[in-house]
Length: 186
Ligand SMILES: [Zn+2]
Image (cartoon, rainbow, N blue to C red; front, top):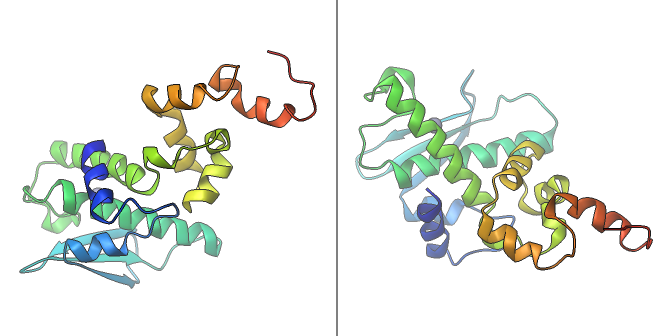
């Protein structure tokens, strides 16, 4: 999944966060529609040559949270398109033609890929990027996906960031907070 997301982002020139996925949708012939869905946050249907991606507008929450959930949903649906194009997949229950077991795997994969489309490895540039609220702001995602992304950050990226500080990464936030006051001791 990670590699698929990397290739997809390279296709649109590895844009800086917050990443606009509309160009990627165009490449894969996806027509995006924001509409009332009464339940699901999004779903995708195949058309003859491409896809229609529907994103729910009837979500509860403040405008920023809703906007970020919609960004995530688009990334999730696009992930199905780019990663599962070879499967008889659909995200609406009535149109599902894959088993429940496989569908569960596809859902996990789509979330994994969505996370890497909106928060790619290359956006981890400074120590502040390890702070969930900072990363959420930078990538225009909600706090939970930002926090999970940091939690599952690869060792390669961790090592790169670790080289920037003299304390374990787990203490990076405290280090950042206290380094200017001179009261931090490792
Ligand atoms: Zn899905």
